[in-house]
Amino acid sequence: MKDFIYPEMMVHIPLCTVKKPENVLIVSDDAEALESEVARHDTMKSKTVSASDLMTNLRDQEDGSADVILMDVLTDDAAAIAHVNRILNDEGLVVLKHPTLDNETDNKKLMQVLGNYFKIIMPYYIGNGETLLLASKAYHPTADIILHRTDMLDGLQYYNCDIHPAAFATPNYIRKTYLGIIKN
Image 1 (cartoon, rainbow, N blue to C red):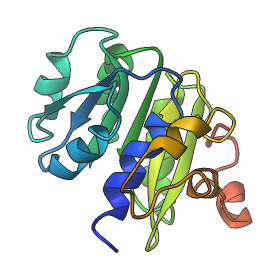
Image 2: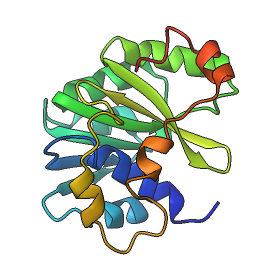
Image 3: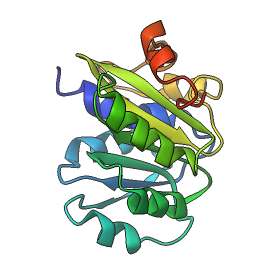
């Protein structure tokens, strides 16, 4: 997969969904590309913490301090997800890595844990068979897309206002497999 696709899809989908995102928490051990993409949104501040010591770094964050969390790490740890919920404000949204959608057991476990805190849980396709998982307390990624924000982004190589909703299209076998677990 092209190196620019992952960071553009990890960052711009959530930042063009949340109404007024200001504070972005990046959880990654290789955050340079994600930080560069967040910087395209001039009204947003980002903070990066290491994914290596995930629980300590999540515990150290203030309650309600983030509008968006970008987790460049795979976790289904219920305690970590509880911290993510605590760190996000009441309209917050998280995007995280997850097992391939073909890994039904691990995905269902993760989605069920997320379901304790988030109204909307949707996987989205980023190319080359890879998906990310979006969990939101308030905003729907296709109904609440901020079109003027998507149009104001310059220098992107992949993401645009047409890619945004299209990324959430799922085939019927995925819908059936995750019926009642994916919340959209």
